[in-house]
Image (cartoon, rainbow, N blue to C red; front, side, top):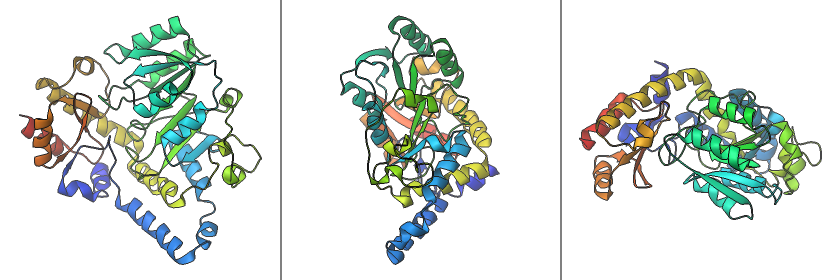
Length: 359
C-alpha cells in the first residue's frame, strides 16, 4: 500500500512505461507544487523571496543529514555533482595517485584524467571487488574515486566491501559518486567508510534538476584544501565562520527553489520509509534480473554477481531500441546496449510490458 501511495505522486508513469530513472527521475506532484510555490514567491516578492527563505539551505542540510546519517556542518549544496567534484579535485595535492574504474561515469573519470595525477584503472568485471582489492595491494592509491552503482550496467559495490577496503587500507581516501545509488536503499554515511559522497539528486531521489549535495567526513579537511571563495562562502547557518570548509564549495548564490526541492523529495521517502523502498526494489530487481537472464539479455558479469542494483543493460541494437520506443517504453541507449532502470514507482506490470516487447 505504501508503494501504491508513493506511485500516485508521479503522474508521468500513467502515460508511458517509464524505465529511465537512471537518465532522469520523475517529478512528484509534491515537488512540483513546492517549486510552483517558490517561483510564485519570487514573482511577487522580489528580494523579499531571499528573506522569506533565508533558512532553507540549513533546512536542506539537516534533512539530508537525517536521511543519510551525516553532519549538516559537513554537507555542501550544489547545482550538480560535477561542480562539486571538480572543486574537490582542485584541492588535491598534485602528487596524489588515483584508482579509477574503467568506463565509470564520465563525470567521475574525465575530471581526474584532465589533471596531472598518476592514474591506474580496474576493469569492471564479475569479480570487481577482488580486482579492486588487488589494485589496492599493488598500487596503494592515494584516492579511489568511483560510482557506487555503475551507470552502464548497474553493477554495485556493497557497503560491506567498502568498509573492509577502508579498514585494510585506511590511508586511501574513498570518493564515491552516489548519484545512481542514493534513494534506492538505506545508507548511513556516518558509519560507512566513505570519506566523501557526492550526489546529483535528480535521479533516484526525484528532487528535480539543479539539485546536488556533497557529504564529507570532518577528517578530510586535513587533506583537501579547496580555494574557491565568494560572497556566499560565509553566509548562513553552518557557514558563519570565515573559511568554513563547505563555504569553499558554495562560493556563489544557490537556487533556493531547486536546492529546496530536496525537502519535499526527502519527505516523500520518509513517509514511505527508505527500508520499505529498499525491500520493494530488491524484490522487483530480483524478478527483473531473473527474467532478463532467462532471455539471455544480460552480460555475464552481471548475471554471475549475487547482488545487483536497479539498473540493467539489455543486449540490443538500434532496431530494438526503436521498437521499445514505439511501444512507449522509455529507456536509453548506453554502451553497447539498452539501459533500463526500475524505481519505486515501477511495478511488475512494467516488467511484463518490457518482456512482451523483448519476446
